[in-house]
Length: 502
Figure 1 (cartoon, rainbow, N blue to C red):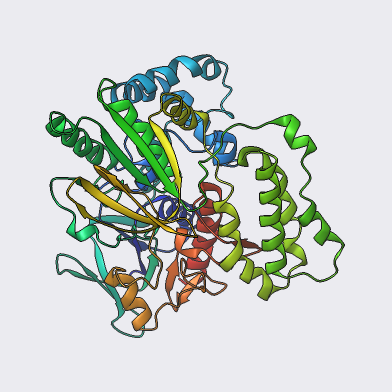
Figure 2 (tube, helix red, strand yellow):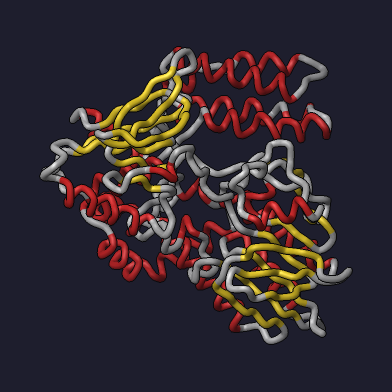
């Protein structure tokens, strides 16, 4: 029987792992059967770069920070070879914003000045999926099968095999399994199951797709525009998906309709895009730099100092796009001073918390927020979400600002608050069963699964992508893997661990 490997999830972690696997075994006397299972049929792209996100959205980072060499040059070469068709597809999928992007960046593209561009995300999805498909076609000793379906459980069927059950009742068997399901499902909000059909609640932005959810909002507004004189839309969460929803809704909804947007987040600050060189040169993260003089420090020391320096930057009205360039290198320089145990503590408890206060985005997104604010059609609420409930006038949203509880009424609520944790009662059975059967142990951060040096949660059960959060992989510590560079690095390393066990 040929050694077989099953990937659960067909995003970029799977894509880069498969590419490295194929590259490593192409000249070896070994036959492989690889099965890839995904609940979407949009294989090898991942939802940020595929159909669920749509073709009218851009990268949250510029190309220079999105992907590193040599992959960046390879991606740029591919874009330049396909640019006419890519831009045509982008123009046909978007509206005014797409046309503006093409006009504003035409000269940079012609001059091959890509680094500072926030390119349409589907460019990368098309690139990586084509790269994987071409690699599969050109190798003779590896067979790759794709299955559309949702995995509901993974169990040990014998000492050497896993039984993988799908939602249609089918069971597959695999010697090695790679769990690469991406970010965990969105949180299920308290009270959301009881919202009246007279109002609109969107449980997550990309299910089934952002395009479908935008269509739902537009239809709701058009259906009710004679009954509701002024529509209030709340986007819960000031993260990338929250920004993106406001960006796309504002482009799609008729500007003559009375629509306002509200964002809610616990920090009360929207992502920043404006780098200020003068302020950067003057800003000194003194609390972090003070730790350089100490012989022994802890993860908590770094976390406290970083937050104090972020507080300092905010008090000086220095935005995250500026302060992050001083604060991130400052705490990164301190990490080598931590022992292994403290390094993991930083990954579990402090890295993501610091990052949540340093959110940045491209000016294409923040310019929309600025325009809406200027026209008094946008506001940002600082508050911690408590729950939602029906009200005769709309959806009542309850939240706390730390000292007191508040509420506000909205016609449309869109949940962009982010993912569940691995101890959530509403967690899909797949993850619950792995823990119950002792096949996986959750990290203390509760957003990742602990792996060994071969990236196994248990024997022959490998983890890839965002579920690796809170692990040391080779010589690098990862508190999150929502970043293409980290995913590529860890996925290539994973391929070698799998090969070593064939």
